[in-house]
Length: 346
Image (cartoon, rainbow, N blue to C red; front, side, top):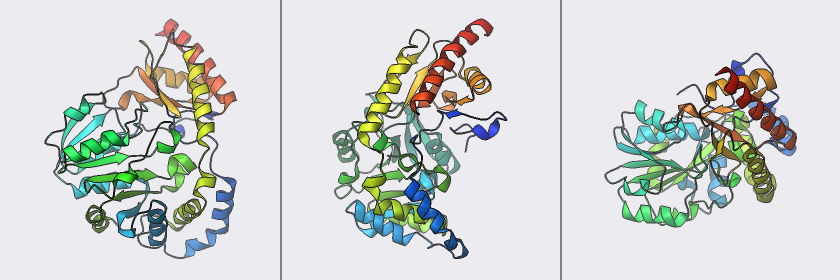
């Protein structure tokens, strides 16, 4: 695992007043969910279910799938490493720029890795691959592909397993999940997370959906008790109140569009990469992401994501996610003054 993901406030002595580095929904976890978890703390004196079977059933039912089409995991990252282990020494294609853990998992398990850039042409460059990894919506650029495109890929490459990371799906307008394709295709794995939508990254909770034999292979490799009792209770409560707890898509859309418009006022110094998600990628037009990040922390208590360690990007890229209006205005001011400072100080 690389060190350089978002939400790395632990590295700094200065208090962070606005965190734009993580793509988690800014309103935070539901107060009803937090109250429920407080009421469940007594369960820490018992072992959790070894595989989260109760939650597994609830997730499968929600998606109109069978119990054996689902596996509960300790967040998406555990899922990626399980898939890489199950496909050990396979030939993998990774669509970049992307979440670094796809690559890290493949490297640990001796995959032969090919990298293709996230352009319209990548779909023509995967012939011979045994596994293809990509985010939909993609992190960090917010790129989205429709289910009709994925279905064509599944049909054209029946021997290739497509690993689709849908962690940001509900925080992106124009997104359609690929779950409806699962009953028809045996070469699809969909990785989903409770982290982003429900703002519980500290609990580490996710799941993977797929054809029964693929899920069984992952299940046999998975350690027992990787998901703790409190995380399991969070998942159970969320599945029982899913629509109620899910961020309102119109609010997400309005907040994201307003944020992007605000950032565009700085386009003389920055290039905003268009995104339909609650986050976007920014190119700094000759300035260095690491220096800007340090300036914003020290002068404003603002944390951004230095995107230079995404494969395919360099030290001119940052990623930011929408926060509350007051914080968004603070970021705009900080970026404006930060660019001015960098221009004068290199």
